[in-house]
Length: 595
Image (cartoon, rainbow, N blue to C red; front, top):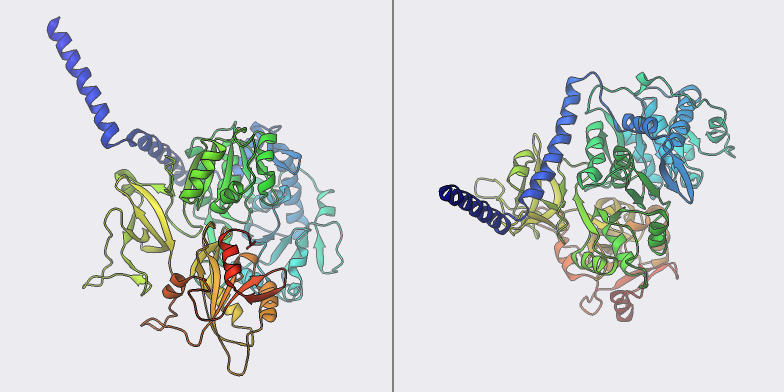
């Protein structure tokens, strides 16, 4: 008996010691293991599709949910409730119109230019039901970029929302000349060659079209084209396969969401975050989402309280806007328990949680066109993701040394990239059958948390959008008094990302014309891509490989007391680029000037 008690005591002591040791040395072991098991389980489910005759797509999952929970609210929009059955039946009507009246067939690509609204989803699902891939167009892009998008994805049909038809001013003739048929979500049209949809929906059948039209046998079949600025030039069409859309749809579930959650989606649906993670995730769970046409900081918390929101989607800017709202006594009175998004700065993260309560912020890192994803399922402040030994076995990536001045990876004597040490900042490379340069500088600490440091090369981020410097450079280069231009991003204290700035050389015998430049950028560039600051130079510095030197320009910023060259700032009230004075500079730093 004494011997048995001795063994039992020893075993108990051993287990307790192991538990303490695990807590000290591997504090996240069990949470990592459980999260990884969920990811693996979902991955196995996707792999099994390879051995079946068809794939259960996100659309198939929606149809299943519409049959299982037909009366449950799917989308709440502007005070109106749309159940799973409502969206299913309206998308069926649209599918019948697309097949019978528009003449669309399986394999066709259709461009969609619509604002956030329930009909965006109905059109999307209706097109998918007849077997069409859909290209989501950014509602901010202008004429030249819009025409380019059609050439990228090969779409021959455009569906445009009733509130966005004016976006086609100046290019409608070019679209029609290219044999692109335009259908508007209206009952009537002033343009004789623009067709209308609303009048035809009302008389269409709500019975489903044959399921064979939407059936796919490959996870790698394209289902969407989502446009991203990429790193150079005009918008790029990132091909979204069924595999990618299914992976994104599992995001909320992986973070612990359930069908009882209510998801708040204030981000634009043409972005993968809102469409793939937000809508796809809501469908996967069988949950309810609250869809906003546009984000409103003043309405956010009232909406959350009114609709019992438990999860919201964000970009870093969104949380800063919320923190900048006047404080109230009910800041912590809500049911929100989780935020899912990216780009949340550490200082904003801390302020947000301190003011609005212990909301778990789940950062997700990934690009629309990339092949790697990090998820901060622990919720550690400042981290965009989490890695460990097991994760590295499943997902191949490296952090390599990067020379900011030369704007290229550091190579050894044999020409190979060099890995950084733990805690050091390096360029993230993800590996498929070849290395993919993400363009992001990251650091991985000794606990396995991964933090975003900066963007490199020809892209920066402002107001939640990627800005391709080469595209902005090309647009600015069309102004008659500009000889050469170098576009880059500068940091502004208290703001996420980087604001656009352009260093330029004026042509001989010409002068800088702020009003003309203002009119040009207003007409040809979306809001987020317009340079806020202009710097006039006599000559441009080049790298040894004859690339424009951006590093020193970025470092010097936009402080007029530190820069001897003329500086200008975008002024929407005066409709001009006006001289950047020290008083204006101080008002920007103090957050008193709207940017």
